[in-house]
Length: 245
Image (cartoon, rainbow, N blue to C red; front, side):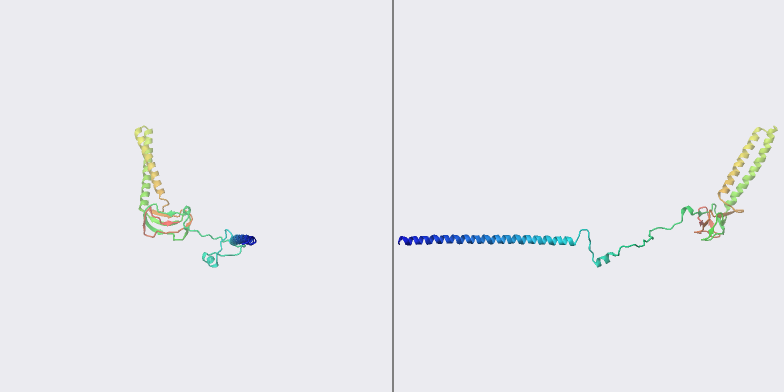
């Protein structure tokens, strides 16, 4: 092989190697450009997706503001909620409270007989208005008779003791009787006065009394008879309520 031919083959080989290197470099560049474009597209898509998600979240937050509650018509009806326009209206003045109706204790009296006995008359009816001191009922009582008898006996003993004292006082002043008799007569007079005072207090303690052994039950103040527990012929005692007024 001649030298010129060898030179030509060498040049062709070098040229072939140069073209191969260029082709390989171009392929790498295209691949790199494609990868770069793919990455940029992915980033743009991801960013755009995030932007859309953010916009959607913002719209949802704007649609449901904080502190608001939305109910349907069925829910409003079930809860008993009524929607009306605001405006001037009349306010109701009636208010209901649980309670119990009772009589005023400061203006209520339970009238009771102060002595036991038998009812002879009932002069007040249920619902009747009565005046202070009006007779409600008349009761025949043996205790009234006993108290009055005791008072009369004390009155007579006092009169006798007073006469005895006056006589003994005169005899003692005339030096006829001893001073001891005079002192005893004075002591008996004082005891008789005390006994009569006690008898009068017992009679007065039973309240107003009628003639004989009659006891009159009277109204303590102007009132209305609201209860009645008394009938003619009934036996009552000093613990029984007969006419609350």
